[in-house]
Length: 58
Length: 476
Image (cartoon, rainbow over all chains, first blue to last red):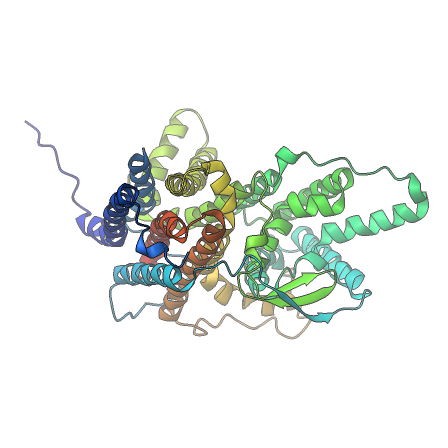
């Protein structure tokens, strides 16, 4: 019977590489939820006809 | 639909950094010594991301109107007309001397001046100079100077009988320039005889001949502006410069304000993605993921050898695939970011947006050049002192500096790392600024302009992480 080796020999390299990816992942998640929130805000504005506050200086 | 596009574009940013989770890439060019950093290198990527986010917020709050699109230029000085042909002659003589050195000099790459001129002064030094002093290559462009001289002589001889140049096909745009830069990168990164001085001399002559033919068919200015790969390449970097040359007059202007005036035509986005992608591949191809045991390159190479290719050809095919993949990867990230942007504010097609925001890629291309090649310029650039005295490598000492050596203490490995990080952060912050400024003219509402730039922020942070990851192993 042979055992399949899990390729974790270079786990240190992978872990350090993941550290470079982390800020991008965090940013993407934050922007995703921020965008969703703004979409919802926009729909609310359409519903009650009040312009969003951030557009006041436009 | 909008949310689906957002997911797609955010996925693009993730994909651009996804390569970063793979094992470390190897060193950049010419790094020597050990880096002595106060914090782990990956923390610089976090710091860079924070700086970009702060820049993004600051732009959204403090930059409500476009400032770069219509920035004024102020005249500084005008140079006399006779300098123009003199510069042209200098360019032609330098080119001829370089080609002569390639054929007549030693075929040892490090002892012949030609490879250092091409790969260090020309390919790296001129982008640096262009980004600071404007398009300094244009007056010295040897094939343009030759074509202008021939045109002048022909005009004197034939008078008005000279046929007018053919109309340059609009669809061709800057595609010839993109192909030229890709071809040069192929020679530099893939071709096994990349350092052979005589082969480089032949390739330089072939390039010059191609330019002369193109200029004679389509006109000197048109061809130089659109199809002469190096003229276009250096001109793109010059658009970031605070100095601008036009009609023998030097103007000063706001930093970056030349970039919004980039006349985007077919092939421009491809050219910019080629510039970034080829530099990225240069870093990637030195990493363990590409060259290590059982890594991508040896595995692919073995497959091509099994198909009957020689070892050399199999290696070239493998590296060609890697080079093209990286160019397409960079292009894909940009297009996906643009697709996300297209989901904001309606009315804007991705193709239109891709062209309108193309100029924001120029500082990124420069940042990658500085980050990847600064050490090569700092160290190998010093070799010019000895090579200028002994250009053919035959033992001559024309200026008494043939014995000078490279001082590797001119800047430490730690100093180089800081330059690389600063270049990447500043380059991407500049890209964000250009994109934000353009978004204010593209989108009717400031709110939409800011939201559209979420995508550009994600792409910029992804590119920054990718760039730092590619450089990171240089300290190991």
